[in-house]
Amino acid sequence: MSKVILKLDNINKTFPGTKALNNVSIDLAEGEILAIIGENGAGKSTLMKVLMGLYKSDSGEIYLDDERVEIQSPYHALQIGIGMVPQELNLIPELTVAENIFLGHEIKKNGLSIIDWKKTRIEAIKFIEQLNVDININEKISNLSAALQQIVSIARLIAHGSRILILDEPTASLTKNESESLFETIEILQKQGKSIIYISHHLEEIKRLCHRVVIMRDGSVVTENQVENISINEMIFAMTNRVIDQGSKQIRQYSDETVLEVNNYSRAGEFNNISFELKRGEILGIAGLVGSGRTELIETIYGLKKPDEGTLKLFGEEVTFKDTYEALNNGLGLVPEERRYHGIFPVLSVSDNLIMPSLKQNSHSGLIINYPKIKKNVEELIEKLLIKTPSDKTPILNLSGGNQQKVILARWIAQGANILFLDEPTRGIDVNAKQEIYKLIFELADNGVSIILISSELEEVIKLSDRIMVMFNGQKKGIIDSVQNVTEDDILSVALN
Ligand SMILES: Nc1ncnc2c1ncn2[C@@H]1O[C@H](COP(=O)(O)OP(=O)(O)OP(=O)(O)O)[C@@H](O)[C@H]1O
Ligand SMILES: [Mg+2]
Image (spheres, rainbow, N blue to C red):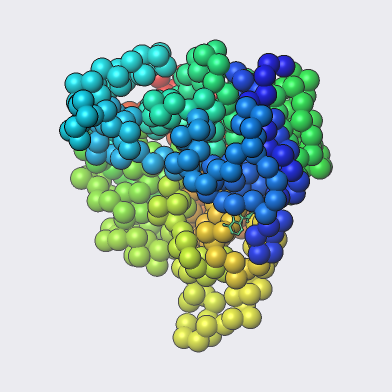
């Protein structure tokens, strides 16, 4: 192994009610791509936050090039060459690529406090070219795809002199192709001698990209290995300490009663002339690349946006939802894609976050809140979805990313919607909890709930859906009725024909 440049030694961190890190020791070598994996709440992000100086560990030491360092803040970490691309990117959408790359690190004209824009652009081009991607440095960040935004975030860290890069679930919202181009960028950096710590729940990515893998469970490192010496099933077993039944495709029965009918729905620039029906108890998958208009379509049905054209029928009657409140009152539930922006009330408890839209169902005659009922419902859901939390009273903000996702999903289950829109329901969720969520989705549908599912993981769409509508560039390209033996290639060929 080449030279160890970073050493985390016996790190401990306790939060009220949680031992988040338990004697964690990890080495990172120069030019190494190291994966850290583990179930939701295993301690991956906490460890990285300790490294970045966002949290202070209770004990333990960090060595950089064999020298002890006490990292005080992310800014300090960056100064000594450690940069992290956080789960929620912190680029400024209204500024250009070049401006973002040099944000907080502006190139000034000789000794003056005036920014040297010409030089900024020249340098920005240099960093982007180095990463072998095609990005116009004068483009606004908001016009770039999620994948390119990731790459700009990386370029920014490199421009600040990082030699250790931490990526926490960078591909959570990327398609397979986009992920692949990110991997190529990471490999270019690795070849230049940079070291990368890579966190992901997609184990096939670990196989594709990483050299070594450290596996955490309940705050401890349980094993580490060269990636070539460990299979995906062995990784899963180490993470969860059990064998996960990934199940096979089931053929489900559902009623032929139409609950929702969408006719000729259009919104300029987003989707065009979309019609389909949804049956009671059916799981309808919508497959398509990012930017195919899927999210916009369901947001419009749900009343978040207005269609330019088209009609909507609910149980045979034409409806228009003025807003999402009306949709909610008509029995529709939406688990949004960007859960952190649209989904959570950060300082409220897990219980409050869960029960918020269903207070009515959890009160006596809709007036007096029924606390015992809430407690029972909440506890059941915490158990069912394997939500890792010290208690139902813990602020949701203190949960790990994946566990926050589960709370939001549970909210809509608690709410008792008849029609449920799930946009990327398992994003950021670990392998084990994913299977539990699949079971729950099947259970809901078997009980008559109709589900529209969007997922950029085609495997997931295939596994869950009874029918699959394929979209591309805002167009409906077809509906696949018989999904028993459908493959990812079949879906792509419908999308691209
Ligand atoms: N600020 C905090 N206050 C209290 N508890 C916290 C805080 N941050 C994390 N925890 C707890 O520490 C544990 C580890 O969380 P962490 O975010 O490190 O998990 P993770 O491995 O990154 O999970 P995920 O895959 O869901 O992102 C969890 O039980 C979490 O609830
Ligand atoms: Mg995390």
